[in-house]
Image (cartoon, rainbow, N blue to C red; front, side):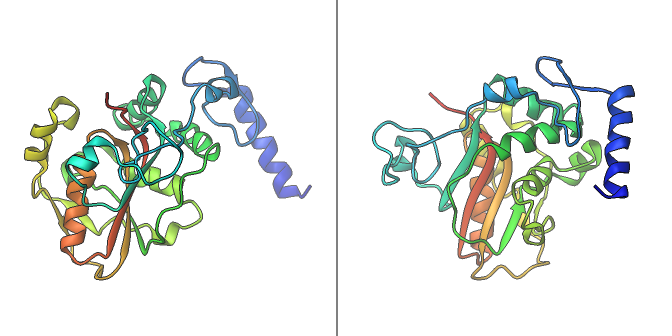
Length: 246
């Protein structure tokens, strides 16, 4: 072991001693190099989404494991994106993680999210030219200090960082919290709220859009329409979690 690595381990040992981390859920003390704020026991209770899934929006569906089936929502109203996939259901624990990240401004939970992402694989999407995080309005970005969708994009595409483009889309006006709105209200609130910045040529490009949570799909649908109207060849969607609508 080199001197540099030994020094790094020693530094982490000192940090463990005086500033121990704890699991965000059970508060169990977590020590050791490369630690995450999620213990193995709590991580094991968080089960990734798995087939059968709607071939378009990724909602769990009944039937076989082939990807030809569409859910009732996509049959009724086909989304503008080619395919959407999420890693985890948006259950109570995932909600706590996302809330701590977004509203508690606790970026230390990124280590817990990274650990969860390392435990699962997502169905391969079409090769993408750009990975685009869903943007925040500039006022919200100043208040929060970071874009959680961009952080999640970096965790998901950790080996493809050059593909991530944060200034391709912009949110032109602030909107009320989407969680407080019905599906029809979300559509009205987000209509024409996103635009292209013109800083990148996207004609004929495949875009992968990244967000934290897929709820009704309204946000990613509006972003997808904007990208397709700008000439993108296709848009796929990846989110950390999704709400499982009844």
